[in-house]
Image 1 (cartoon, rainbow, N blue to C red):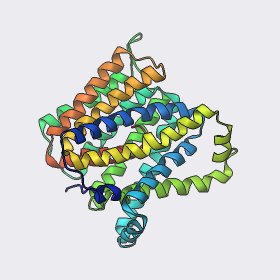
Image 2 (cartoon, rainbow, N blue to C red):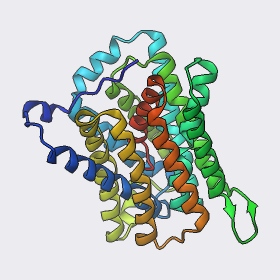
Image 3 (cartoon, rainbow, N blue to C red):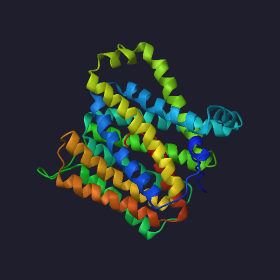
Length: 331
């Protein structure tokens, strides 16, 4: 099973000669942009409802897909799908476009941005457990060691050093449930529709999210427009930055990185966006970070990097997971 990525239309029209500088700029931009997403999301959780944040996120994702790959080709490809493929795509859209992001925004409002970034990586071990247990994919000792490092890292995040107790707050639980939803959604892709182009996956998420937004909005006390009008001007800039930098540009640079670099390198650099995001949260949001969070983050980082040496099918799963994550909300 192989992933097939295509550059956006405007990049395909202008050929650029390969160089060492180009991939470096793309990767640095990707990591820097993705690092800002959790901090922007945390700032907005106190100003906008999870449903409104979902609308902003998926609207930008849908805009990226429509302008990059063309709306008419996407509609044509969707019409050519079989019923079984449409059902799987619908399930994927509901899980990763509605349920998981809503849970993530709710969890982010109740926990720290640092914790949310670390615990969001729980989708990787869940995805591998499903792949090995249900699909019978091969696994190695190195693979399971990486999974063990991830698990211990998640446990350390919940450790309270002062009382030596393991305790997950409600926000942490919601983030873990969100990661579970993403993992099941990605597993659905692996099992049934791995051959579909990635733009259809992005489109299904956006359609599902926008549909639930417009269906539920009339029953809310405050509409999205009213919420925006009530925001102070500095928060309006945060919304714009979250939508363009955190969503549009994050997906754009990720696609460019996949085209320019091997998937193994993309996985490695993507891992460092978590570390950069934690640093942004500490500096910009003044969040405290304990030794248990640092240790947990390092173990999670080692676990993700260790997956580079997993079997080819496992690496494909990681790349597919990262592709969906770049269109998710944690950065």
